[in-house]
Amino acid sequence: MQVSREELLHIANLASLNLKEEEVDNYLLNLQDILNFANIVSKAPVEGLTETIGANDNYNVFRKDEVRVFEDNEALLANAPEKERNMFKIPKVIN
Amino acid sequence: MDITELTVHELMDKLKSKELTAKEITKAYVDRIYEKEKDVQAFVTTLTEEAISKAEQIDEKRQNGETLPEVAGIPIGIKDNICTKGVRTTCSSKMLENFISPYDATVTEKLNSQELISLGKLNMDEFAMGASTEYSYFKKTRNPWNLSTVPGGSSGGSATAVASSMVPWALGSDTGGSIRQPASFCGVVGLKPTYGLVSRYGLVAFASSLDQIGPITKDVEDSAILLNIISGHDEKDSTSANIEKKDYTKALKNDVKGLKIGIPKEYFGEGINPEVKEKLEETIKKYKELGAIVEDCSLDIADYALATYYIIACAEASSNLGRFDGIRYGYRTKNFTNLKELFKNSRSEGFGAEVKRRIILGTYVLSSGYYDAYYKKAQQVRTLVKKEFDKLFEKYNLLLTPTSPTVAFEIGTKSNNPLEMYLADICTVSINIAGLPAISIPCGVNSEGMPIGMQLIGNHFEEETILNAAYTYEQATKFREKYKPEFKGGAK
Image (tube, one colour):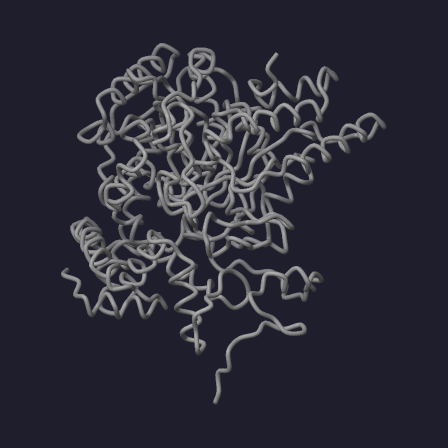
């Protein structure tokens, strides 16, 4: 499958990434290369096979829904790029 | 006696007989780090002073007659994508350059409960995406067998640190070969456990259905000892296997008589370096001499598996790495006027080129219009890969292949060609897709003295079989007595 420039920019936008002009050509080339290789999966004999979503067969692992308090709020907030009082600070969302 | 040349089981004996103290051992490693780190660049963070003071505390407890775990006082190195409370966990990324985990990974808790002493956090490809450790944001780690070559990746810092005797053993993580391939390149032992045997809680996620933490060690016995420590069910990881805990050291019987080994011929064909092939053929002969029943077999899935691996791993990565948004932790751009710009610029500036490449590829294969052609198809191939392995394990106890088609390559030769770098994983990725255990152990060196590794693949939760087979070969061939890294070659 041929990937267009517009498509790459659309995908980057979905992934919340900006690509610089000089990066676009390079990524386009790499992506095309890798996808050409990955196309081999279309030739695999998988007729009638189900999809495997994980490495083991676990399905719905349950535990009791109990509250466990994480005490160390300070350590959590210490990693925040910007904070105010006991909260993460972000730019204004609603005008 | 050079303390840093000893294996962990030898160190444990000397601690027990009081021939050595934890402080003497730790000090020897700290000195070794001061001596060698400048050449090999394996650490992101060193904890030398903390380690020595911890060792003093442990010695004091022992002197006071407290009963401590047998490994208490042995140092260790930890790959920098495993969370360690109060110590930076960077994933070798600008994104997490200053991230201090507020909690310990389950494996870190287990190391702490055994009173192992952390010497620091080890370099890796950014977010474990790579096969050479060249994609680290901080530095390029070098291979102690030849300083102008890569150590492999992504656990290149862990493999180099063990091979350079800067740590007696280390933890790595393996999503598509990231423990086994660097172990092979650096002439040490690397074990990727069965998916679910070791808790992933606190391992920064790359591809959740493929990731496993495992030991990188000097020999097979140490691998079994460290697996004993880190394995076990954990309710904090819903994919963790609820099975009885085993003592893997009991599996080391030094006997492979009657063991059925399959040799998948596709792993010895085109693309495998002739010297690697030759050495592997000697290995096969050795197993026959030791009484194993060795037979050729077919596992014609390598190309499908590699393509499937990159589709699934990138798809999962694109989703897992969505959490890095510059809000709660990690890098935040200075350049934004609204929230969308904050997300986009933080991610674009915080992630390196390879990570962005994989996020884009993953987003592409999951996007509408391509999901069926790539992602869904890859998941069906995953079923095919599992079935092919199942068939072989009906007949054989284990499979033997090279760990990597080549020895360590020169720094800079593949880093600008992503597809070529991906092809370096051809022998290892199918094991992660099927969730199987596999071990890489050194089986010789090539004409330039670079280590060659073999991979032994076992059926699910049959670590004992591959550990015993690896141990038996190791005892019969004694790689460590014949070869050691000489730190030759210069930085380019």
